[in-house]
Length: 267
Image 1 (cartoon, one colour):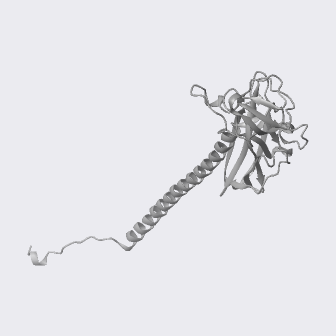
Image 2 (tube, one colour):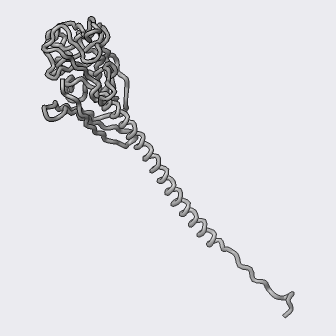
Image 3 (cartoon, rainbow, N blue to C red):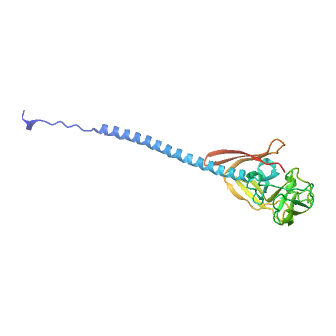
């Protein structure tokens, strides 16, 4: 056969085949886009939940750090359990012996029996103007405006040679363990709308017999609900316990938080 007369046969895509390919590619593209969208949404949800968790953990860490140096028994859970108020030890006031454990450096011990107008410390006296607590048994002992009830005392003078601290007013009752604590502030945690708030009041020689009144607080966390505080007083065999519960919700996601903090209760 003459090659010039040979018919060449060429194959191509028909219109129907092209349409089928386009439809299939569209389906695969939609599936891929949905997969990518869900993946990104999952990452975003994880980031949001992680942010909530980290925020709540920071709040709990701050509460725990302050509650660890709460003055024994000076704790008030407010009505409805939505607020917590407590007096705080001045943890930097005491002289800590090199061999002492950190938890033993938040209180001092005096050497007097049934002291009334002064105490003599075993180490060094606190500066004039310092505020100390002796044998605080409950919140009223810390907060009462009646000088015959409030067990806070101001150091009015010292005698270095004997480590003596003169106090005002007279001591109401001696500590069974001859302990005293330096005090410098009161703290309140509460819910302001949906904002977890912290307020602090400095306690010094000018107001140590005045009512506990707090300035405007600072926000710690937003979108907080279900805030519950609970206080279990200590006994001879167990420490006092503060329980903290709250929920942070944001963008449809919620994380519950719970912490229990042991409080020293040896006044």
